[in-house]
Amino acid sequence: MSTATVTGADQTVWTDVVGQHAAVAELRAAVAATHDDPTVPAAAMTHAWLFTGPPGSGRSTAARAFAAALQCADRGCGQCTHCRTVLAGTHADVRSVVPEGLTISVKEMRQVVQLAARRPATARRQIVLIEDADRLTESAANALLKAIEEPPPYTVFLLCAPSTHPEDVSVTIRSRCRVLNLRTPAAADIAEVLVRRDGIDTDMAGWAASVSGGHVGRARRLARDDEARAHRERVLAIPGALRGFSDVFAESGALLATAKGEASSYAETRDAAEIAELKTALGAGGTGKGAATAARGSAGAVKELERRQKSRATRTERDVLDRALIDLSGFYRDVIATAFGADVPLINPDLAEDVRTAAGRFGADGALRRLDAVLACREAIELNVKPQIAVETLMVQLAGIGEPAAS
Image 1 (cartoon, one colour):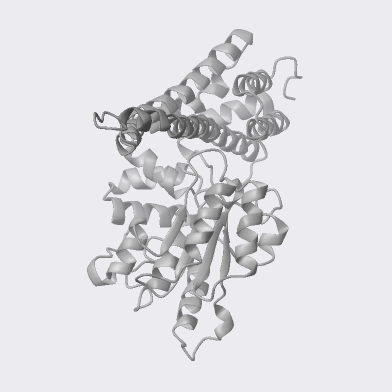
Image 2: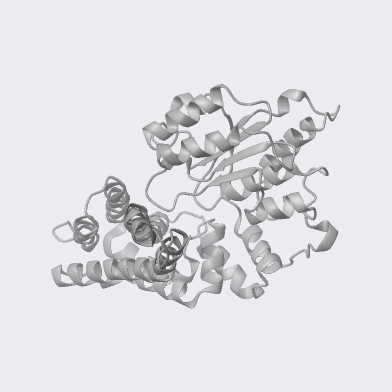
């Protein structure tokens, strides 16, 4: 595999937007329009954009690169203060909304919209970047809609969501945005960026890219994290391990315990420090006049922080489960392709022998039933079904208990 080295002056804000050549061309034209470039029409730029695409396609990466290019006097050089601070998430005139909990509240959205209505402090415009617009509550979406309908002349809204489906983004918001569809990056493109940007060994980068399902972030994690590789291996061993009811409960328990453990580990590194920092900011530990009153007044703020932390932990646990379910769906897709003899690349080429064994055990029909069960489990968890119930139900279906044997 050959990889191009991009360093120094060759590095622009678009360099890490992987495999999205058509989208980048459209965004470059929009940036050019803001500089009154006579080679592009003024209509190439608009005040609201909706970036859509499958998980891992780089929606937020593309949106942040676009934000940097809009603020840059040189259309996204990647070297100036504006480019570097936007990409780092510290630019004073770029408001990023990255929900850590399950939803984006109306309170948070109103605060962002109010800030975005101000004149830019250091750059050419105010930019609001919402990385998970599908997590807006109905009230938050309405608050955002009002701002998009009557935007200040110097404000740009960049929304990211999996699709334009009404369940992801309301029709009223979508109709006021220019939609930019991203595609799943090719494995070769993902491997190239892992080598160039992250310094990952070529062989490891190639393997991680080939099993990531086109998800750039997933590929990077698999390439760099031993535990992530071990977790994937455990999840993809589930289809072969399910033979009876005892296996159903054992595998369900192991998967749920892994998700809960990862969420707890993540929380331990942040929660205590956040609470201590908040209490200090509110005057905890003071001994002067009014210290007791300040301490009593801080109880509500601490309780609100604890509520947000609990929501964040729930989301983390669901995200871990969802990654496992995505891995399982990829496995059963491979089984279906193998059972039909389709000449297509496997999502899990390193498990080709396990895939062939599964195809012989329950065939394409059985694999399709299991794939439907995985997708139903994802939907159930999204609808707040208790994870234990959803996962145990899934495992019964994956075990094929009571189903006819493959013909």
